Length: 566
Image (cartoon, rainbow, N blue to C red; front, side, top):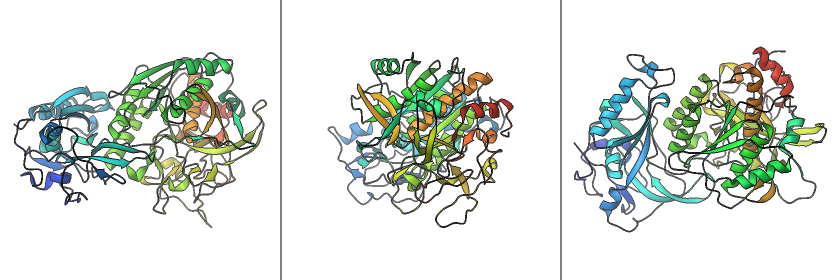
C-alpha cells in the first residue's frame, strides 16, 4: 500500500506510473515541463492502477507564474495536507439502482471509501444524498491517486486580481476500481473559479436609483406576500456582512428585515473585509435586495472558498439543507469555457437535484456583454447561468417613478463591453425542449434558431446608472449588475411559493409556452430595445433580456394554473 512514506521519484524524472504523470494521461503538455520544477508540490508517487477521468482536462491558469517553494524542504511541501471533493455517479446508473433519485448508491459509497482509505487517504466527510465525498491526505499521496502533479503559481483570476494557488494542467485519473463510479475530482487545483458581477454607479449627473421596495412596486410583486415561511439560500464565494449594516439598512426602509444566518462551507466563514468595493459589496447587495423584497423569509448565506470544489459544495449543502429553500440565488459566475467539463457537469447535476426537490435556482447572466470578458473575439455564455436547470437573469436600464411604479422606459443594459448584460448561446448545453421555438438576432440578421441553450431566461434592472440603493460596510451607495437581478428573482420566487404553498422547482417549462416570436408571454413585460454587443433585443424572447422583466401579479396567475398560458 502506498502512503506518505512511500518513495517518490526524483522531481525531474517521470514516475513509474507511465502516462498518468504530469496531467493524468491526457496527453496535454504542461507548459512548465521543460523548466526547473522549483514550484512543484509533488510528482506522483508510484501508486495504484489508474484510468483517465473524462472531462477533467484543465488548461493553464491565465498568466500563471510558477513560484519557488516557500520555506521548508521539498519533502515538507510534499507532505502538505489538503482536502478535495470527489463526486460519485447517481444511484440510477449503479448496477442495483438503489438509493434516492439524487443520491449515490450505498455500494458505490462503500467502494469509494474502501478504495481511498485502503490507499492511505482519509474520508473526512460523506454525503451520499449529494453524491459527494471529501477526501484528505498529503499532496503527494493525492497526486498519486489522481495521476497529476501540482505547482504553486501566481495567476490572474476571473476578477482580474492576482492570487497564489495550487495549479495543475492536463487531465486526471482515478483508481481503476472506481472507473465510472467517480465522475469528478475537484479542488486539487484551487484557483479562483468565479467573479461576482456587480458594478458601482459612477458619480455622474442625472443618475437615478431605486430601493428594492420601489422595484417591487415597479415589477408589481404580488400583494399580500412577504416570503413568510420560506427560505432563500444565497451562495457567496468571498466577503461577509455585519448585522449592524443590515439593521440600519432595513430600518431606513421602514421595515423589519429578515432573519439572516451565515453558514460556513469547507472552512470559509462570514468575514466582512471592510472594503465596500470588494466582495462585501456582493454579499450585502444580495442580502439587502432579497431581504427587502421578502422580509419574512429566512435568508441563509452559504460562504465557501472561491474554488470549483467550494462552489459545488455550497450549492449541494444549500440544496439538501432542512428545510429546503424555495430559491437559491447565485451571483457568481465565469465564462462557461473556463470551467472543466467535470465541474460544469457536477454543478449542473446539483441544479437538477434542486429542481427535483422543488427549489428554483436563480443565476446572474454576467456583466460583460456577449463576449463575457473573453478576449478571443467570440461570444461566450456565463456559467452557471448557461445551465438549463437554472433561471438565468439578465439586465436592463430602467427609467421609472419609484413612488407610483410607472415605467417611462426599459431597455437592454449596455454602457460598454465591460458594463452590459450577459447573454447569448451556450457552447456546452443543447437547446432545451422549452426553447425549441426561440430565435436569436445577431448582427444584420436574419434571426436564427440557436444551436444551444439560450441565455438569459428573465431580466430586471441592472444598469448601475439606474441601480440599487444599498448599504455596504457603513457606506450608502448605488450598485448595479446582474448579480442584483438573481436575488430579486429569488425573492419573487419565494413570494410566489408562499402563495402556492410549495416550491416551484424548474420554472422554465411553465414560463416559455405562452411566449411567441412576436410578443412576451403572460407574466412578463417585454424589452425590445437595445443590444449586449452581438445580440439584439426583439419582441418575445431574446439573448439580452430573455422573456422580459416580471409582472409579478400576472406571473402569480400563470404559476397558479401551471399552464404557462393565459
